[in-house]
View 1 (cartoon, helix red, strand yellow):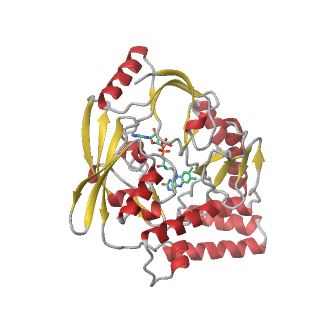
View 2 (cartoon, helix red, strand yellow):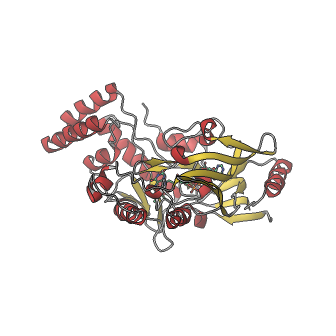
View 3 (cartoon, helix red, strand yellow):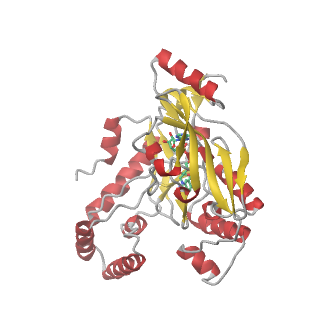
Length: 366
Ligand SMILES: Cc1cc2nc3c(=O)[nH]c(=O)nc-3n(C[C@H](O)[C@H](O)[C@H](O)COP(=O)(O)OP(=O)(O)OC[C@H]3O[C@@H](n4cnc5c(N)ncnc54)[C@H](O)[C@@H]3O)c2cc1C
């Protein structure tokens, strides 16, 4: 394994934004990782783990230190009984190609997670979820390199600390484990999960669609909302804005602000939103609505633009810099906060920025 210098990171992210890595390597084995970590130790530089680069915004300056991109490959069947299989996928495999493979085998459990960019190694890190399915429901264990003990460890599902889009790997133990392989238990008997409203609408409650029909429906729905980052277009990082946690106090403040600052038609739409989410018991998923009523769909700063179809997504129109994206985020968050009182969190990890830069862009003075 070679350790390269000054490697452009832009092409290794789905946003297609960011400067170079000071050093870069793509280890495939435990020995490669040991060697890379030893190199970083000798040079007293930091180590950053990069997967498919689909959940991050890298600074235009790039990343100082060593960027380590775990690249073991392979898919293996570990165990099989009448109703299920245990399948192991290596961290460097592309997630969606793995989903395609699993669907071809006729195995159930991750079909609703079709068409999500990124590497299989990040599935457990992010507790990836969509359309009613989530990593925590299928992961049985991960095999990881423990950077504290320089050894390979196996971490069982119950020790992964899974909750919404989180695990120990991106919270309490962030940076400690480098995931090399993930095992999933998948079903052999048809078990369509059509609980998500868009899928329910597409198939109806009584339907029994096949794995391929579900995958195609998910792709069709996603294509309308999330432009899948391909080489030809600029790129994006999926949902750039997150839904905030709305406490009863915040909801009251929001309701008051909607009554004071918005026309009757918006007040009616807000009442409908409240009703919709009350009946679903999922909390108020409100960010896209707030960006919309503040008239920010299509807002553009330099080469970065708020997507018209799904305003949670920031599009790189081809020439966006990280400063364009952060300036756009600042404008959106400040406008929404001023008019509604709701601070909208952002989703991607900000890499290579200083704390002062992040505070300057994102501090709302709450
Ligand atoms: C168009 C689009 C749609 C998306 N839709 C969804 C969605 O529906 N649901 C969803 O959950 N996410 C979604 N995402 C976000 C993203 O695709 C997922 O979170 C994905 O799992 C990130 O994988 P990655 O390999 O690109 O991770 P990266 O962005 O490279 O890394 C994410 C984090 O994981 C760490 N990491 C990476 N690899 C490893 C490893 N092997 N071991 C330990 N740590 C590691 C990194 O250090 C970083 O902190 C979407 C993104 C895009 C661009």
